Length: 502
Image (cartoon, helix red, strand yellow):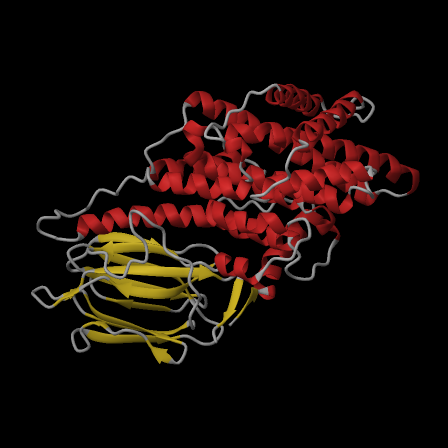
């Protein structure tokens, strides 16, 4: 078994990011799931999973600015992430708390833009000018770190922990990348060895279940002392008033936190970031609302069960793409080598469906998520039989055909073979009493379409950005009139991972 990061796929993503950064542009991606693959690419660079070249990589945090803070980013990314979770669970964030979160996000955006500007000035300067730019960069880094520290508790408020979780994950990415920048470059930027060691201890506390015992008060005291110094020099550094206001607000918030106030509850504030992410994700599974069934379950048995598991699949998939994948990278952003077991988790399969009826072959349930499994051989061919509806289906994995679902004689056969560099990235279905129609699209714009949708008029699709189809299962086939397959489950794995089975 061999598993590694796909250097080609990662380079394709990061080249776009770095070109945008070097030209002073924003990438402008607005779909949260598409943002997720770029975030993972930056995190993979931060973990040094492939060799990197380029001046923009000296401060990886700035690459996040191109992703998360372009015009309308709050509405297009941060709000969408929250709304998608709220649509799936029984908890909604109140307007009062939303106002607080929006203010914190705006503060993160203003400071990210300021940090990027200061970093660019430092990178482009030389001689005495660079020494002044270095001091400005150090003070800006100190203050930005404090702004993020002060914002994090608002994303961890117990009552709204589940719908806030993807937003927390984005803020945690920024916090840990800033610490990583400081650990790697702090001495060059003028930090003392003690300062760098404090950042290293903070990073350990936020990324390890064991954390760092004790010294929390000492760490907070040093951090607040540094922030106080940054605020005092802000005028000399010609910092914008809006930025200095966020620094002062952070100082007040951190003083309040140090006095014993915490917004988390349930001991959340004592949890490292990855443990917190998994804890809240599992809590959210207990809040998932089943989708209403499109069909009368009495006449179409299995439709309600399928609709319920489809809601859980959508919750699990969203959390994997926008939270749990990030959490796997976090402990390795400061130089520790990532073990193969973590890459295996990053390669976990996400699911869409069941579209239609019944839940046979679903790897997850209402009580448990799908297990992490090893990837098998890639899909190399799709074979589908259908006329009015879908009569049968079979996938070839590598050189061997998988299970033949349904009829091997009914309907007209259609087949699409895939070349070595081809894969299915998008699947659409029409479902109802039967699985009425399917369409598989590959990355070379070739499609296989089968079925007329006679007994299936409800539409569903799966096309997670940065993923490829890796498994297809039919839930049930019925021979009684009208005959045909009655449900389908689609599994996808990330293109960022290369896997060679034994």
